[in-house]
Image (cartoon, rainbow, N blue to C red; front, side):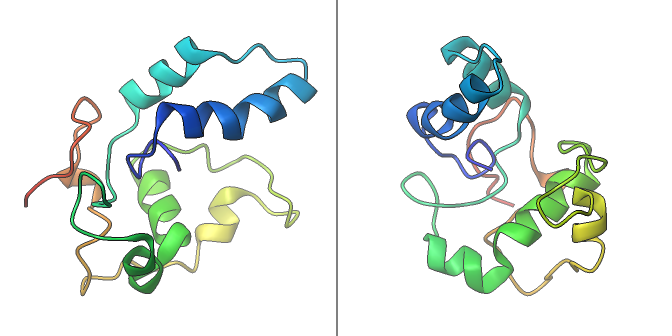
Length: 119
């Protein structure tokens, strides 16, 4: 989620690093860079974008962001979550909100471009 919202490398490392360490998985700055390179920047959030987190929440929030990433192959839908269901099962009822401009559709985002599309 950090990569798709334009969050910092530090945020990605600080959020995923401790979990990986507890599982005995090596996770370092190079892994963060690889994730950032592959993940499209699809949330037009500040400081580089036009909107703040409250706007994203009102547009559909993290579920809308996750559903967009899932629909375009950037999340593994078969991963089990704390709900006991998979990501795909949890996202099944999430609908695209055409009346918002905070989360870009997957077609609007290029994984190589770390800036929001102006479309």
